[in-house]
Amino acid sequence: MIYPWLEPVWQQIAQHWQQQPQAWLLYGHPGIGKREFAEYLAQALLCESPQANHQPCGVCTSCHLFSQHSHPDFLMVTPEEAESDGGERKLAQIKVETIRNVLDFAHLSAHRGGKRVALIYPAESMNTQAANALLKILEEPPAGMVFILVSHQKDRLLPTIKSRCRQVVLTMPTPAEALAFAQQLHGEKTADLLAFHGGAPLFSDNDSHTQLRNELIPLLVKPRLIAMLDYAAAFDKQKLALATFLDWLAKWLLDMSLAQQHMCAMYYPAWQNALNEITAQIDPLSLFALIDRVNALAPYGKHTLNVKMQLEDLLIDYLNVWQHKHT
Image (tube, rainbow, N blue to C red; front, side, top):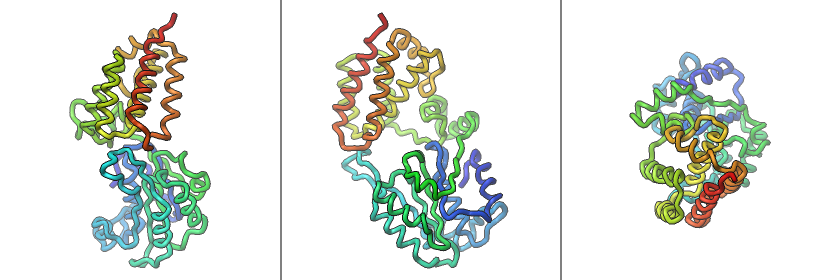
């Protein structure tokens, strides 16, 4: 399916349907429907009775096989499932063995006599060996083979891979579109949740995440050492990834820096008054130093670090920033 805010992008693709590349790179903000758009494109490429604007018919044999996730000429490539006992902390990767299977698939003859399509989502989850293996076939793709790469962070892809794809940005909905769509699913707290997710409406309201995040913010407003250490232990007990906490904290720190500039909060608008109050006396240099530290940890957000220790250090650093008043 294609969400309403992405219809203009489809119209642009349809207008140039006869000049299709053999490799696409669809990229944009998480939570706007990139995967659904990519699957729709794949179905259209395989459809045997395309409709107006090259939309898939939904009724031909090819479309039926696609809807049943059994089309022999379509391959979906996603990261390996994380081990259950590791929670969300295991780094999900597409490994070279998986891409070698893609290469084997690419050289097969099409069962339905049309194209073959491989969809890689998210493309930045390929490790270095996998990305290099894919690059080789992107340089000389077999006839009739189409690659669709989908990315949340295209800057993490090899420049040589990006250069061999037709890059298409999938756009965010307008604030009004996003709010109207998300309200159908999330009710009265939609505005706050939508702000936290950067205006992208296709977010999942994870109850355990929301509860922990709701416990964190009052602690950031009035930090207390013992309570912070208790929070680090509670977070660690849930086996959540460090990346999750870094996301929450980075957004709060950004809103603090905006408040110092007398600007509106982006991610925690419900806490605007508290942000204005606590940032009025905080040293900007100390705040920026903590932001830099959080950003430096981001690449390790899914690695097997001692998450509890990392949280304790970050929260103590935050407490020090909070106590570092202007003189």
